[in-house]
Length: 116
Image (cartoon, rainbow, N blue to C red; front, side, top):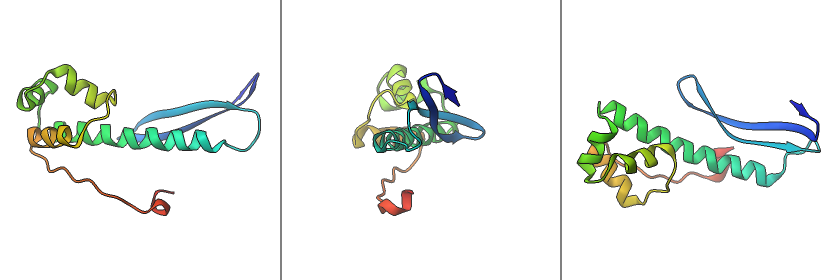
């Protein structure tokens, strides 16, 4: 895609099913993608995978956001923020979400080269 100020690029990830989530669009003036743009896109992709995992856990349990909120002893707005990526949840919050949806929380680390 070419704009009047340069070449527009979009870095994107597939989130759920056939839905594509655009995580970063930028205009560049050279053919080389700036490293900071790649790092930002990777960060947003990671956040998107957490959001997708939260929504999968809730739908697999057959629960609404309101039902999850009641089980977590919080509000539906808090659950909506978690599922939209609007907040960075603590491990304790993720544990409460997992308990509310009948899921098991698993946090893992992988080697850098495994992500590329």
